[in-house]
Image (cartoon, rainbow, N blue to C red):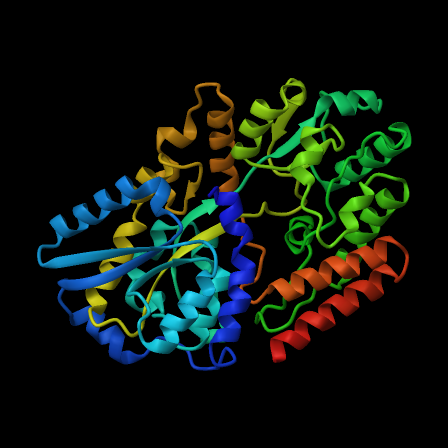
Length: 432
């Protein structure tokens, strides 16, 4: 499974997990009991470490990682469990409820939040605060939730971000300068209007409607400071969606993108039906292999944003119920330290959350290949990136926002009303 498909499952997994636990209750981790045991306990004994669909591609890496930890810490044993991508949240929910949650767990912010909310995860700020400064600040913040005592319930691990992809041949056909590509949303919308006017319906700029993350990239405040209410119906959000509607009304968006089940943005780019998409190194290789004519006109640039770029994080948390808390915390720190993050990054096209890893020549020097160019570009981008998707943002919320955006674009509702209704839906779900 690619990292991209791995991340698509995350939001649905979070919703399933929340439903499986007791209503996502109000008790949090961070008890003095486990804090004392971590600080005063010995690093010894057996623990379990669970990853999320990584064994098939990276078995040798993880076997080596575990062997290194056990060698550095005599008397320890790490049992590695790897769960398939499907139904991951259901498995975590069952394990948590049944008292069999693994000691050290790989997940994302959406999946970890219900566990933390119900007291199943340690507050890593209390037991691993000594390593906070090795990570990018925004990566550390991913699992820091004011709504759960302000604690940090996982260590950051690997991160994903990607470039903007442009088909310059379509820009040229539309009378736009292929050597002067958009650098922010304002320029992108301006070019999209020109393209819509000149393309005669043969192609469009956009192949998807806005997502919550893209609102964030535009500079919209998505939630209040306390992370208790969604706020993406503010003036900035209305401005963003109005600009998108302007492009839609001019014919600058593929009609089928309004369908709830539409997932064809990659194919639309490969068949030269759209001129722009947010992509990844994987997309570039896929275009090179499957659409060589499009690849000839392909240019990639940093993410199109008006604010900070987006990132998708993976995390490592520790069960608050582990029988060997000192060992579990030590292993979580070991997995996510700079040396081991760099080693894993060299196995797969991801970015480390450890600052020192990003200063390695692997991320600062390019051999001129597409993959190396994207890697160096992404390493700079990830330093400023934010995980815009809130931990409480569920699949139902995502689906509702897409429906409301479609209604606004088609004129069934005003932009303001559609966003008001989407925010109301999300906030009602938060109260359930």
